[in-house]
Length: 455
Image (cartoon, rainbow, N blue to C red; front, side):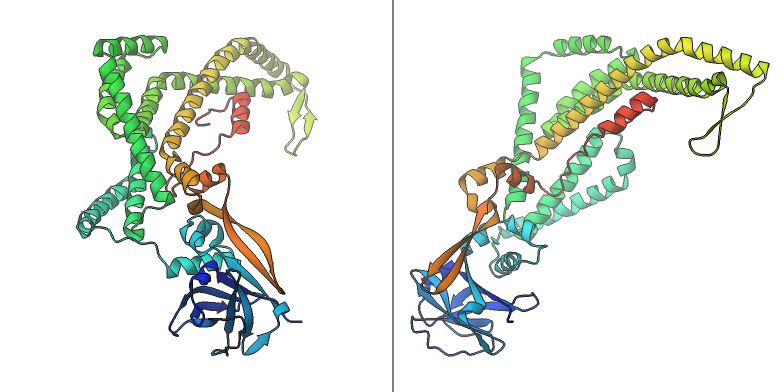
């Protein structure tokens, strides 16, 4: 039984005249052979795989792999197909007409099809390789751009080397991540020489980030006096029980916020996160003390409960042996158990208060981290392109059959996915979303008295 072949033809063949040669390639490593026609030219040259003919289709074959195509109602139809020197019957192959312009415009098909072995992924990569969308930039920008990239590479290397230390500061971590993202953007622009979905999304989000940061600073400086800010900081520190030694630091952080806040709203959120962490550090210390005390008391009660019940731990899993105890052991064990049991309500209330505060603090920190990520990955550019230029955001294929006389022709039209799916695929690669919060693990730590270092 012969395998069915597939012939992929561009819909732009109707613009060419009879006698022009078709250019493309034949792929034989797949289970079913496929002929990819990419373009047409008047002259015969290397890479020719067929020819446009009239309705009679009486032209001969030049190569061992040759396809003759005729136009019927502005739709290309295969008249004759020869593979490996053997002519195939019309029932042994299928014709698929694709929209060449939409394939060239789309940028998301490469991410969803490049790793696949289907015909659309191969066709997309072949079209992109043959018709790059490169625009030559101004030559005067090449030298300054290269110098700036080298400078960013040095800073990126230093930040990567200091990453174990920088991870304790949200501002330092965000500065390192922003440097890496900006380096990626400049490298991408230098290589591609055009602004695509990923790069456009990053650049527009960066501009909005800077604009929002300027608006926030203008509101703080223009609408609020220094005395009002000082009074607000003093009242907030008193309500949060911040030690007196930390209050000058918080006041100094306000002036740092005014200077470094010009870098954008995301940097302002990172500074607020660090200030919030420093201001609540004393609560974290008290929480650790309460958690250790509760864990020690709970484990002590659990161990002494075996003594009260007259049981001893067996090394075998899940086994407990009965064991006689002396009067001295029972007296000391009972007294310790009683003391720990009656102190448990006080310790428990103390622990519950500070564990609730700790969870609230970590929740605020996680919300700020996700808000910072949303500002960086703001999908404004992708949304505009998805609304007004949908052909640039196509991700899936729609196959429509067309019956022309005795030939069955399939029409492949790239279509857009939903807005949410498109936005998720257009997040710039250097931006990494915060990991999901392990609520189950956090709840286990709360009940067992383990220290919650991060949600």
